[in-house]
Image (cartoon, rainbow, N blue to C red; front, side, top):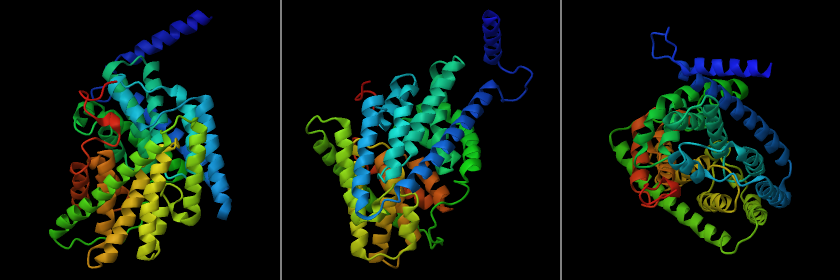
Length: 426
């Protein structure tokens, strides 16, 4: 009986390996694989988001001074998960595996990534769920590709499509998510991965549908910025000027992160002690500046809808950068894209305070674009993501700011595995 089932399975797999000859269109069996992967990615992202929202609301009940011990405890538990189950790695590991390991992302560390990131993000760490989702859905793509015996570029494309589906689900931007999954791999030669653009787009589109149906997120602009009115070609010059200012802050963030990394790596200590110390420091910052707590998804709207003094805005800017740096270097898990957008929005408000005649929306979005492009080296996807998340319909000013951040970024990228293959060896 078992032998018959195996023969049937082999027969079905052989059928799937053949193109649909009756179909006169470009549509083929690979489309179905990308679509199914997108559905899986959207489902995974939807379940992750529901659990994250539940945990966040429960942990948020601890207020005042209790924020400090609760974040320290959550940091300790996250470190314990990593110590006992396994280190899931960070974004540079994903990039390395896509570039040097034939696109294979190992799903065995997914339980560790899911549990540790849920604790870190829900308790108020300054990193978002985008990186964990990208890793989990990307490795799901690898697993899915292996089931159907894909190899080489086909397997790599499936992994990238999985990454795109996870990223798109959170941001609600299929095109931006697809481009990001390619741009993040290599800041100079992203074109070598563009064979995966169609798989990424298909998986992203299906992921977007499923995620939107589950949590109703990503169906419109997330951050309510004031309506922008184009005032002339000088707006492009302003976007570049704002971009230069934001790039300076991007450099500050990168060197701040290097400073805290040197502190945490000065002595070899267990990961759970490192995350405990990180949680303690983050708790102290969150107690005095509650708006710096969490990764910024809701806090950006809070920032935009309230009037803060210039002194308070500077405190938010400085300590949010410190909070992100501590979160990144102390072993907490998550992604830094949305937190960087928060920093950019704060900087835009500061610029508008000193130069009230400038357009507030242009200042905010240009700073958000430039600082993210400076750190992640993703100018194209940053432009599309911001246009989607803010409802800002004028692409060109955002693109000018993104390119400014990209070309004025440090020569050595923040994500070290984005370096040239000649200088970076697996």
